[in-house]
Length: 333
Image (cartoon, rainbow, N blue to C red; front, side, top):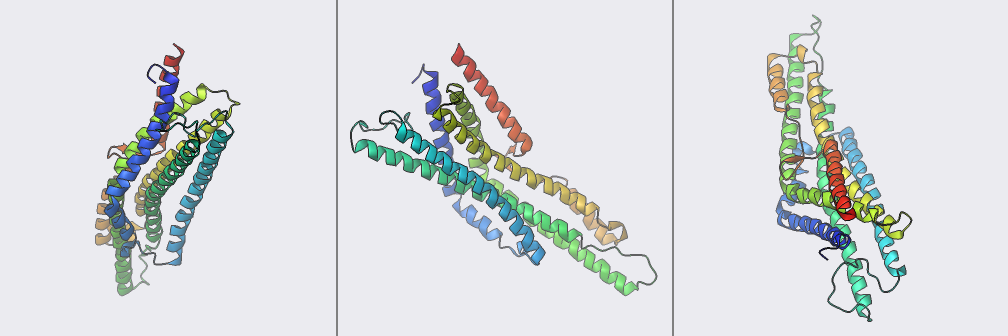
């Protein structure tokens, strides 16, 4: 294929897709014990929802992830059906991936039928693997976001302690002790979230890195393929459908990671808005230490050094467009 830029781009389109899929499968396999630790950590005493309101917060974030991935899953299924139909109605004996080398002569039966089923099954397995691993990764981030929301609601339970002479010293001491207990519980839960987030990042950072790298080149190659097709052709719309899926997966990663960072920053502000000025020295000292520890917001990094956020989503799109412009210019020369 070397020398034919369009043929090479079609081959790379398949190569980057399957390489990303394999990296996720390998990462999931070798980090299986860490994933079991993550699931076990969700049942930690500090993460146990103690009230109906806390349970509602967790269910709300769970429904959000469920709705988002149902949308991506539905569009993925539509794309798979679209590719299958295009292969069946195409001229001659075409396969879902014509660029893939097969060790048989597909002009004869049943070689064509067997190869078609194998490629179709490969598409289904790849889509299922993408969705499964991505669902686990995103769900852990949203679980951390739910726990941060629970802490922010706990901070609202810290009461003011008026200087009224009607309040006895005993009642004042009880309020001080109660507020200190709430603050310490919030600090312990936050530290548990930090450890949980670090465990999740360490588990998923490798496949997230390959996922991001593969997406950059996949967006570039898909855009290059679309540029060479007529906007009214079926191949153009098939490529566009796959591009939407890729962008949807990328945005979910970046959006959920951005929510984690935003909520960890909001928690620090919520602590400052508590009536700390009415509390005793112990409360103020613990609050100062906690806010200093929370100065560094929680982030989910791919490959330990690429922070995922909405800004990173835009940056990836810019990088993909730069590669696309280079390929398009090379093809025109």
